[in-house]
Length: 588
Image (cartoon, rainbow, N blue to C red):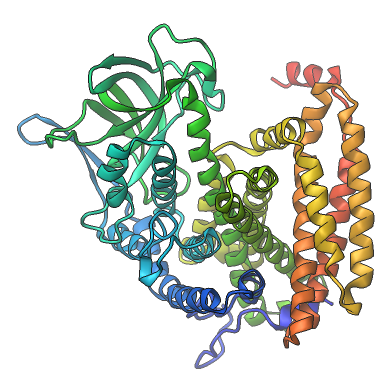
């Protein structure tokens, strides 16, 4: 089984003569080497041949650019981190960020490719309507297989345009959205959101930044502790109007421009840049707002709700980056294992290594399937805002993808590094950079615990479990290939077992529910991914693809190696006890 899964993975070009240390040639095109991505996309777009043809051509072109141009630029940018110039030679405060030229070259390619533009306005590459999230996030997935830094401001710019289009006044939309969606790097405005404060962290309701109305603007004062893309042209942030109620209900949403309409700098200062583990080419910093001018995004009392639109969008981007980390890990691990000789044969032919590689391959395929299913659900929710079921599924899948893909992305990057051995730990190879960059995706926009709590809330308040179950039952009912009937039967049994666990968890204390929530989210994500893999394998079999048998094998193996262990772990989740508190007290 493992050998077959390895057979169709990325092929390296032959080197001129053998060498004891493998040095495989980089892929020339991320899209052409990624059969799971092509399969899932074609399944979603099959009904519209024009849409599929456009997407296939665009992603093929972009996949080549990412592999051949973005990758080497990322290596250079990662080794030349940005600097902050706070004062000019006359002693005037300027807070100027200085980047290596490679960083800007990456930006020109990424924004020029339309990732922040295509779903926020019509007209991109001849489209008469905004492009689908499905294609946009597939493009982002290709990009973040190389890039771990520019992707952060790129994602925030994309989602800021979405938020302004949904909630801002016509005047703000006309002033700023064309700049946010520009594909010309010289006229582009990039976006950011400054939420984290020293006192708050994930507890956004503890925000202490104060807002005061002053005519056209509001003035904001306070400190923001972790500000990624700290030099952004436009910033979304939360602040509490003087005398406003405590908690998230008292927060307003504000748009802070770096430059005011008269061209002068707004009154906030960048105190220092963060010395980060990863995403080193992108500037994150600490900011003090000194009566900074800001536009209120109305209504005031809906500030936190509107900001969550930004958070959910960037969570989806984060999940995409996790899936991309898994895919790049497959590429690095398989290429190395095919060329590295040990005990008289390639590593890829060693039984234990073959099993580990096969698990990495199917885990990556599952994350890719879940990513595209989430993007497709968002497309459906946007197409009909009155469709409550589509909105609920979209919200749920974003949290499930964020929880699953970012954590598995780190594990995949670690596995690929370990397979390369000592060389993987050396910066001459890409593994160390890929692992460092993967870690931030777990933290960004809420860690595993936070998004797992969001899954609980969606199930309690939005009937998300019923939507989840009904969607999977419908998907499985449509899988009618004989080769997949055993897999479908097993998936139905797993769905019944998960339903029993959901019912059990609903009866226990809130503390016990929170303890179980990370494993519940992991299991739901795995089962949804497994159903998507089965649907894609069914599509492949009916189409008569050369890889059809391998796709069916992927679905079977993934259920066995990932869904069943996740279910077993969920059933063992125990209620809260005093033991944990006791162990913590005696730890130091």
